[in-house]
Amino acid sequence: MAEKPLELSRYCIPYTPFSKKLEESRICLVTTASVRAKDQRPFQVDGDTSYRVIEGFLPTHSLTYDDVHYDHECVDQDLNCVFPIDRLAELAEEGIIGGLTEKHFSMGFSQALRELRESTIPALAREVDRIRPDAVLLTGG
Amino acid sequence: MVTVQRAIEMTGISTVLITVEPEESAQARPPRALCPKGFGVGHSLGRPKDPALQKKILSDALGLLLEAPRLGEVVVREYR
Image (cartoon, rainbow over the protein chains, first blue to last red):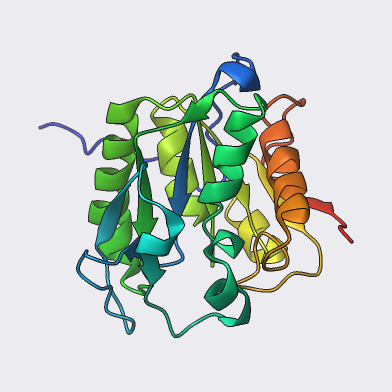
């Protein structure tokens, strides 16, 4: 009988060496701050294990967020406080990074940890893997 | 958040996390993480409408990709 595949121990830290130059690298942004495009389905603020794919060409004013768990003083004025898409675009224009991926990713708030671990997060990681960014920057709320 | 980071890193992609909860993040053992000290949840990138500060924090976070590994550690830096 086949053994269950081994899982990474929480004591073990996965590590992929970064061998490119930043100025040649496409960066993908992944947030857990419940950011989405305004025309996408809202996150349920009391718990939502889904994620949204955010098209890279969307301007910041077409994005919003659905949250009741973090302080909104900053983000109501400037979404870059949790989703620094304009700043990354500027770093690309300045030649500090190579560019941005065509898609970014956003998760909502959820305490359904098992579903996140077994379903949502593997699906998201595979989708990130398919667009092969050179590096991923993650932000919380 | 670190669970997401670790999953992406496991696919062979280098990752870096910006966190404002350094103790919690360190417990989950991130491959690379930066904590801008003093900013709370909702302010990961510092103050609103302060592009220079936001870009400094971003550049420092991305800079961790080029530095020697500090596995499981959250690098805490102060910003003004």
